[in-house]
Each structure stands twice: as structure tokens, then as C-alpha cells.
Length: 124
Image (cartoon, rainbow, N blue to C red; front, side, top):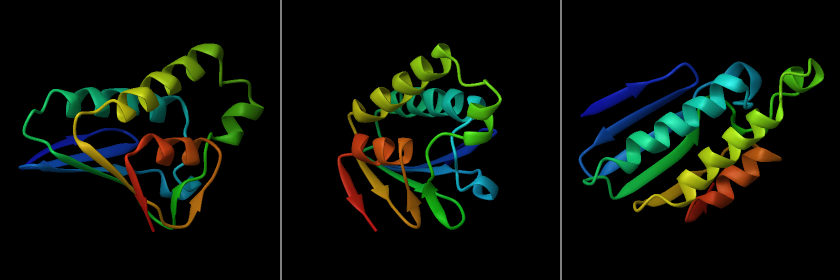
């Protein structure tokens, strides 16, 4: 098994199965600047692992993803570059060769719904 530990996400690969866990439970896995960078890093990591056939995307704590971090939005930290990086990460998730499954629990709002829709399958 190999693990990619990022600031806001954890990616574990065990043979053909990968688990991408959003890990900001204290803010319901809301997406901040580090989160979108981590999404790009994680999807790039998964895209280069030919043995990965299934990716299970889930959120730690009581939410899948509550969308963008409104505190960062209120402080003007979500720039055009942030949204471009967001789109790169979500598009990369949608384009993975592996089957992607969003394991939705709790809140799945705004950008969190966009993330879930980028997956091939969704379950709760």
C-alpha cells in the first residue's frame, strides 16, 4: 500500500483500489487554497498509477464537502487563479481512467456537489 499525505487530503492506494479522503472535517471539508492545490496533486498522483482501477472519494467527519471555504471568500482569498485551479482539479478527477465513486455523507453543497458530479458514480 502507498499513501500520499497532503495538508487537506489523504490518498491511499492498495492495488487496484484508491481512497481519496478530503480531510478538513473542522470546516465540513470546505475547499480553501491548499485544498484545491491538493486536489490537483492527488488527481495527478492517481492518473500516473496505472494499476488503480477504482477511486473512492469521501470526506472525513460529518460531511462530504460543503463547497468553497466562505471565510476565505469573505477575506478575498479566492482569486481567479483559485477558481482556475479548482477547475483543473475537478476536471482531472472527471478524466481519470479509473472508475471514480463519490461516497457522499452529510453535506454535499455547491462545489462539493460539483466534485461529486465529477465522479462516475455517487452513493450515500
